Image 1 (spheres, helix red, strand yellow):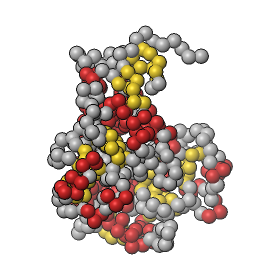
Image 2 (cartoon, one colour):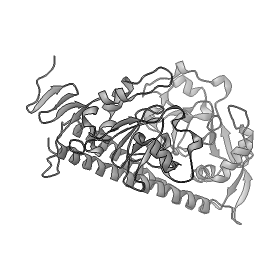
Image 3 (tube, rainbow, N blue to C red):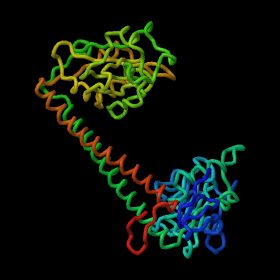
Image 4 (cartoon, rainbow, N blue to C red):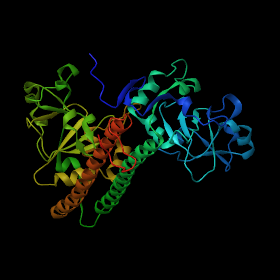
Length: 431
């Protein structure tokens, strides 16, 4: 049974909204100017032979950027653009993907061009600025609810697509214009934080790559040994192979690590399947321990993982396609090996040593023949510590970025539905 509506809200075609919001359709948001909602030119109206070195930029799928159109543009002459004047789009317009990766939406930026030409795969909407804020409706069409609406209205014949008729009929909420702007600014601020964290993270990763290249370069003090001489290499042998039916989600049973669980040198334990205790005990040589190093040897070759700790129940084994490395004696520091196997030098070795045509693999014998650089143990520990500290910084930033993205999603769900209001006179959210 449907509960009673909260005071100040009403039930509409677009769901429950505040009393002072309206339920409308996209066509009611369009500017009264001619060609406010237009699709790109079809057929021979725009072909690759029309492209020139400079002129009016053409919006293609690759230019549908985060919030704003971006990337490398193709161009047509001004004369060609004028011949397709209805398809020109200007700053503040919304551009939608009509076919291809449906659901994409971007805003036409103020700089550096005065106008753009939408291609055959896009549609444009010029909103009426008296009733609609373009940035607000960018967020509306980026929301999970509106993306679902696009999927449900996709025409599946031939190449999946939507058309102008569908776009015009999309139901949308329309808050008062001042509130639209306040919501758009709040979400834009959230995006600004996400972008700054993303840029900082990219910079940190780039710096780490440079430091790795410097620290892991060959030095006169390095000893060069074949990896198989200083490390045991173990994997799951054929007769021990596991079938999908043997995987479980019982958290009390041992983990079963696969290459799918690797992510940026760490493991997503919450996504790892489990196996029975009996199957775990069947292969004692690949029962994992802290400080083990793992590597994928088939498919996506060379993904590397360092086992720091193993969560409850403290037991884990390997599926096929993985190799387990352990030092023979005190021949190397395991964390140093992890970074050595993540180096450009090892990646180049993999490219030269892999075999196969459609599905590549790297044999255990080939890996054992890798000439590893071994500095003095104290230097190995120092190198591993420096790079590990950088990984910790990166992990902290990744967690902040994930939290910021999750926060923005929550803001969108609350603000775009009116469940939380932004008083335009104070600019601070209240419920």
